[in-house]
Image (tube, rainbow, N blue to C red; front, side):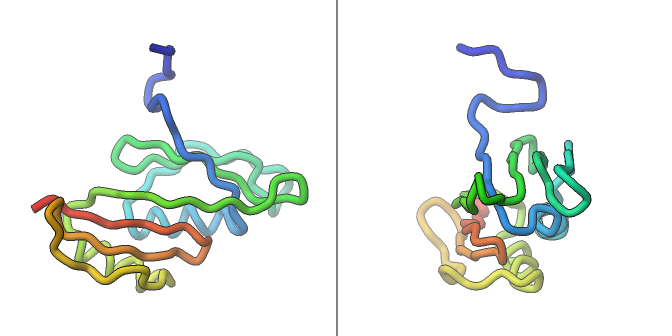
Length: 124
C-alpha cells in the first residue's frame, strides 16, 4: 500500500469548479467542512484548495481555459439527512431525488450550484 500523508486518504476527489471560494462556503454551512488549504492563482482564482468533511478530504480548484469545469457526485453520511437536505436546499441546491427510506438508510439527492450532486444519507 502506498504511503499517504497524515490527514488524507488514498483516494480523494479533485473537482474543477466555477466558484471554488463559494464552494468552500457551501460545504462549511451545509456539511460543517473545514478548510485545510487555499492557494490563489490571483486575487480571484483558486489554484488549489482542500476541505475536510468528517476526515475525508476533497481537493478542488477554479476552472480555467486549460482546465475546464469538472464537477462530481458524492455519497455522504450525515447525522440527520432531513436537516442536512433542508440546509443544502436553503443554500441554493436543487432536488435530484426526494428524501426516502431505503434499505441502506434515509437518503436523498441534491445538486449544488456548482454542478455537484450530493446523495445525503443517514443510516437507520
